[in-house]
Image (cartoon, helix red, strand yellow):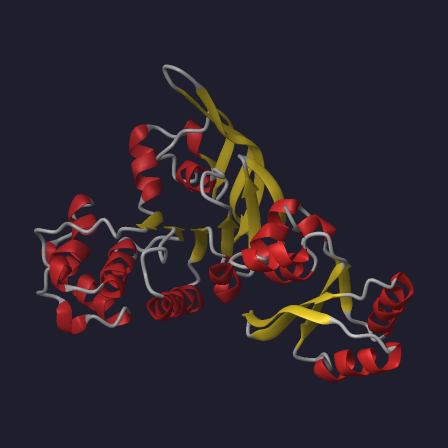
Length: 337
């Protein structure tokens, strides 16, 4: 598979008057052509710094960033500007020009590269059709909803026919329904035009919705990489485990000091009868602390957290019962805290 972006030993240090911050610490990452790649981490983890290093809006303190085989640090300013037309970017707060109409916003990057106005207008109208905003071309950003603004930003990003689209928290300012619609649009663009998409987010649900692969950044370090399915089913790092349980802080508290297990299942698993039969067979009750289902790559994946009985023999019998039925079972000591 063709490599689109390669990051080798990238570090980034910000030196202030009173302190020094190591935002990135030796990051190594490879993103292939046509992937939708998620980079996820909690606030302050370094993920936005990393994405800005991918187009040299931030120059790494050390290390190498290769895009389509070209080392960005070796490019002259004019070459770097040309490369950036192939690496588009959208942002959390849209960054539209408020005094320009929708169509003029989309035309703006084509003006910069001095495309003839007639060709730019034709291209802009084509892009507004793709994002479903043809009827809004003469509207101003203030007249648009958040989702519509982000659609304009996507159309503008596509204006120069980029090979890569960087999305820095692009859905964080949107409600869940609008987020789903924007993610569906990005997936459609990826499939139709083959654009490699890198999504920066702090929300695991966004990654699960459309990404094929994911990297987890924690305090400037690369904590874990893998397919989204692998990381959801078998998270290895503490950072990954926290993200898998994102938004479930109340369950953390209930788990403290208790023996709990996490069961992962897919649409192919016979789940509810297994739990009911386990309780009957082992003659001991369990407490269900969490149960949910998520769509990952079009396949339903679920998880359930069970609090096991205090009787150690009964608890061990239950774990063995589940494993005998080929279910993923993991004890949760490391998920809490």
